Image (cartoon, rainbow, N blue to C red; front, side):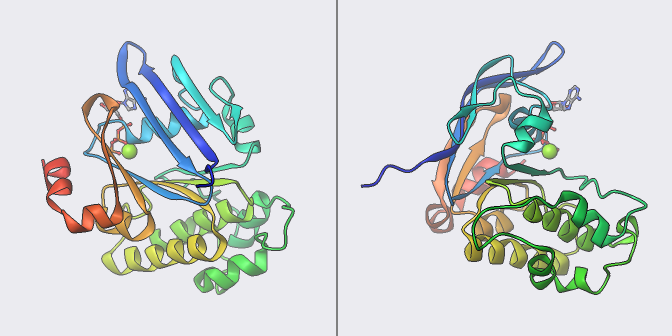
Amino acid sequence: MEKKNKLLNIEEIHTYYGESHVIQGLSLHVDESEAVSILGRNGVGKTTTLRSVMGLTPPRSGRISIDGKDTTKLPAHKVSKLGVAYVPAERHIFPGLNVEENLKLAARPANGHKSWTLERVYDQFPVLSDRTKQDGATLSGGEQQMLAIGRALISNPKIIILDEPSQGLSPLLVNAVTECIQNFCVNSGITLLVVEQNYRMALKVAGRHYLMGTKGQIAGVATTAELVGNPQIIQDHLAV
Ligand SMILES: Nc1ncnc2c1ncn2[C@@H]1O[C@H](COP(=O)(O)OP(=O)(O)OP(=O)(O)O)[C@@H](O)[C@H]1O
Ligand SMILES: [Mg+2]
């Protein structure tokens, strides 16, 4: 079998906030064109794992590489330049800028015919194309999530990292955002790492799932088929 390229590889990282040892030896990887989720209870360290990858809260030990390049000690802007688009749970829409300005500010050229352009983002998110001149900060929660994802796409990254895209959305909007993520993953074969408490959404958008235990360690890993076939795994793992 052809050996897959580990686009993101996290090896045995330990991450702290001051004295607080939050991530205690975590390893995981995401292959090129793969969509992977991290599932875990509140406060186990999911966001901290993403912040470690982004260089926002760098690990004190262990190793992180992106497309074979060691990024463990790189600051966030350099990690982002290597082609990592991070959409935090708070979305960080630029206030005072309209939808189009938000998108244009994030746009980066890509080589290849399937690159993301303004037109392609509007095509994918018709909601945004109806609101190009609206201040990003006045969009609804679901619209802001779509804008945040659109901004990630238009930067033409190697990998998109989403922290709880369903957070704060009504069930209807969760479905809409889920469909968008499914569409752009399937259509463009983009590499995705997503953190979700909404495991139904995670099962729809990712094919492989890491179950995070306390102390930010990986307690298990399973494919979507395995979790659908044995929902008890999720219950045991995520029930409070
Ligand atoms: N800036 C910080 N300073 C100190 N401790 C923090 C900080 N941010 C997070 N923590 C702590 O680190 C632990 C992991 O937090 P983290 O936000 O990574 O969890 P999470 O799995 O993303 O949780 P949630 O599901 O609620 O988003 C928690 O105990 C949290 O209180
Ligand atoms: Mg979190």
